[in-house]
Figure 1 (tube, one colour):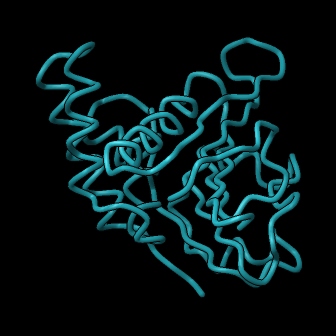
Figure 2 (figure 1 turned 90 degrees about the vertical axis):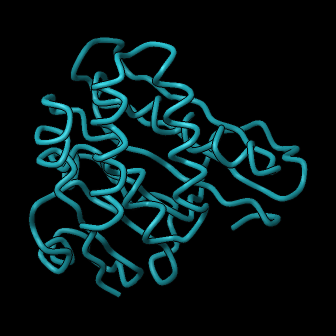
Length: 193
């Protein structure tokens, strides 16, 4: 953590809600009086292309405006990126936190992340999303898992922000499905370390 700023890097593919997750978490923190930054980084701008998004949260004004080089937390929304790109780039291998969308147990990923000794968690976010909203968009269950693993924000504050933001664009059925997905991500995450 640099200068009391928590930095999160999200990995996924375009269309999986990576940018939305980054922004939603940041806005929930802002509602609690925190200072925030959230922004995406695209490669080729096409559906399914690997992309990253970033979230910064702090109790003090954030004066840096560069990309996140040394994240405290890595959230991997698309598990096929593990071993394809360097998801551990810049993270502290002893103290970092990695959360991966997978039905596999966390210890199965230790072998795929050589040298990583920090906290590792997995949650079947895609399965939860399919069951809760009927679509394979795993971003919301991943936010629930992140909240549980880090205790970063109260789950209630994220629920309120999700309800407010999603009600502007989606039906009540989709909003309720996403709230269920958030809660299940929070409850079903498995933590190692």
